[in-house]
Length: 518
Ligand SMILES: Cc1cc2nc3c(=O)[nH]c(=O)nc-3n(C[C@H](O)[C@H](O)[C@H](O)COP(=O)(O)O)c2cc1C
Ligand code: SF4
Picture 1 (cartoon, protein in one colour):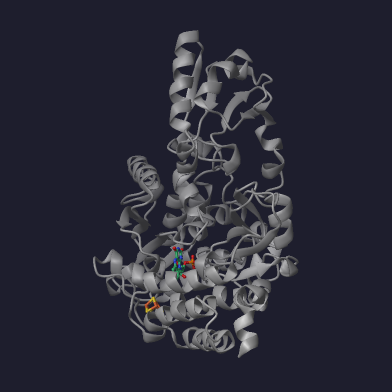
Picture 2 (cartoon, rainbow, N blue to C red):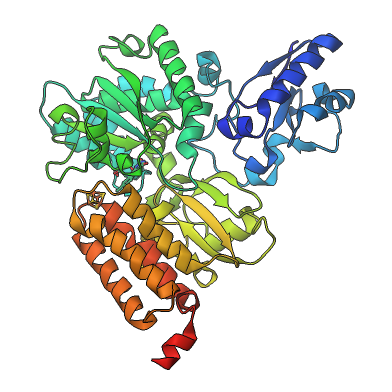
């Protein structure tokens, strides 16, 4: 039997030299006359082990990593084909502690299957959710998603079923499903990993959303910085269409649904749903005032579901295994699983899917293994550039929408960026204001002007100019931005700023001598 050797084509693996490893492996297989084939899978999400090479053995998959092209010959000499021992051998993939501790529902197939093999997808429970949805009434599908407790994974945590119900009940000759794959948050890569590693799950989720709400057309909006994801997604759509998963009759049913990928140039604000819609319509990425909600008047003024990649990619497992199965994971009002993306100055960075409820300390210290620099952790920014900085004193916060909100934070798209004790939190606060100034769409004054004033005030604090007065001014400015901005870009920038100032006051008094002299 032909041996299958897996080498990821995921962008993180490619960045770390996967292509060279493939070349070397293909050369050695040919030279040695081995009966082996290379499968280009997605990533398992253990970035420090990429490129991770796996081989299928009778006892399961065995992993080696991180592998360089120059390691390939010695790996084959050591009997990689049969899972032989080698210093780079990590044992059975599923037994690697970082993977073993996870609950993979949305990412169950990512890194496991050949992303562009519909056969492989089906062999791993693919399309069962869609098949079940086809046999149900739209309202029953919506009820199932509502019952699962799934909330939007793009940032706001809005219940997905309620959004779908609004679109189902909205009247219109045409409705749309828009997948938000802009993924602008710092330290996040879950959307990209799904699109590159298991694109059919997103297609399946969008088709289910279409059938549930009466939408027949879907768009995936992503950014030009994701060329690999765009290529895999586009190829997967073609394959799905040719196989009758998409098209005039989805899986032979009376439902029509088709979709395509659209690419933006890459602006943070184009991840905001109304700005995204403008961009998708070919207009400038300017935020629209709400109401009307996109669910009533969205793309081209038609009722539109806008959901994040992970929200949509979590729907197939909910339909396949039932709302109760999904709902049983998690805590409080945060049901199911969340793909944590651990990044920054951390030893074990990568994607970790788990039920809600782990504490921030467990995530950073146990799963992430502390900092890569081996220095103490000073702060962790959770939820992207608009998320708060958490000090170690708040590491007992469980990963849960409400628990983070109660501590003036947010979980956003579940990006976790770790900083060691060399981080200067005043600089981070200034950066938050600068980021907002650069990315602001310019529609409202508190954000457009406030962010630039915020940078200036932070600079004055850093220069030791009237620090107490300027700290008060910064807090006042944050208050104005928080309550006066039209969207969360201006409205949430105060979170990183205020959390930095509240939890790390010492960094905001860089020249105490000046203050004492006042
Ligand atoms: C400035 C800004 C940027 C955003 N960027 C993204 C993004 O990159 N991806 C995303 O899914 N949601 C993003 N959102 C949230 C979207 O507006 C929206 O809530 C989301 O796409 C809804 O999908 P969900 O309910 O599945 O989370 C952003 C919001 C704001 C204010
Ligand atoms: S808060 Fe900023 S990004 Fe949002 S609408 Fe106002 S100016 Fe635009």
